[in-house]
Amino acid sequence: MEENTKFVKSEITLNNGIQMPLIGIGTFKSQDTEHNIYECIKAGFRLIDTALVYENEIEVGKGIKKAIEDGVVKREELFVVTKLWMSNRNDVEKALRSQLENLQLEYVDLYLIHWPMPNCKEAVFDFSTPMYKVWENMEKLVELKLTRSIGISNFNVQIMLDMMCYAKIKPVVNQIECNPYFTNVEVRKCCKALNIAVMAYNSLHKGSYLKEIKDDIFSDEVIEKFSKKYSRTPAQIILNWALSKEIIVIPKSSNIYRAKENLDSLNFKLIEEDLEEIDNLNKNLRYCTGFPFMNGLDNFA
Image (cartoon, rainbow, N blue to C red; front, side, top):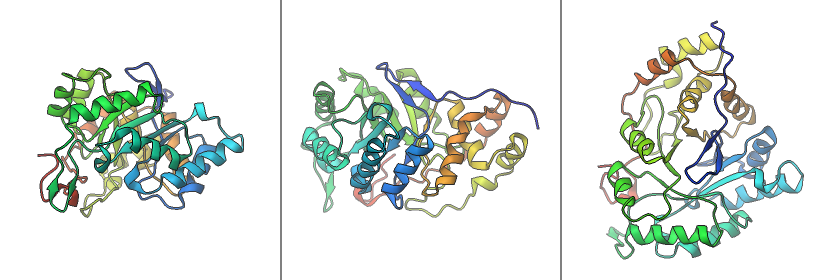
C-alpha cells in the first residue's frame, strides 16, 4: 500500500465566518433515531442533519438533549441543520419556531429552504409567496437569532444567480445530491464561484428515493482498487473523495459501527491522481427526482 499520512480537513469556514463540520450524520429514514443520534454524538459526530418532512425532529431533539444532559457534549459544540418545507413558506418564522420546539432547541445552526418550488396540493401550486419574499423572511430568522446561518437545498444555477440580485445575506450552503456517480459538476462550479459551500446528500449512492438503484458503486472496480490501495472500506473511499473537495457529507447509518467507519473517513487523504480517476466515474445518475409533490413535472428540468 502506498503511504499517505495526510488527513483531510474536518471543518469548513462558511461565507459568514462560521465553522461547520465536514462530516455529519444524516437522519432521512433513520431507525431508532433518538438512540442513534445519542450514540453518534458519543462517537464524535458534531453535525446533525434533519428536516421537518423526515418526521423525526422530535426524536433527533431527544437524542441531542440526552447527550447534553449526560455531559457528552455542549450545545455550542453541535452543528444542527433542519429545513423549511414548501407548505410552510408563507410563514417561515412560525415554521422554524415550531421545529425548534420539536428539537427542544433555542436555535439551529443552519436552516435550509428544502426545495425552491412553491407548495403543490391536490395538483394546484401555491404561487402566493415568491422566493425573494421567502428569502427575506429567512434573513429575519438570523436577526431573531433563531438560526445562526441560512442556506438552500436542491437549487440549480439559474435560481442561485437570481438570488444574488436580492439576497442581503448570502446562502452559506446548497445541499444537493452528489457522489462519484453523480458529481453534479455545474452546480458545484456555480457554488464555488458564489462562495457557497456544497453539502451532499446521497453521498454514498445508496439512497434509492423513487428509483431502484441498479449500479452498485461499492463494487465499482475503481472504488475497489482504491479500497485495497488505502486499506479502507469502499464507503470511506467515496466519502474521502468528497471530503478532499471540501464537500460536506451526511451519510446516514443506523449501525453505530458503520457510522464510526464513516467518521474515520477524515483520517486519510486520496492523492490527486486518484481523486481525478474517481471524478471520471460520473454517470449523471440522479436518483432524487420525480417526487409526487411536483405534480408530474421534473423538478430539475
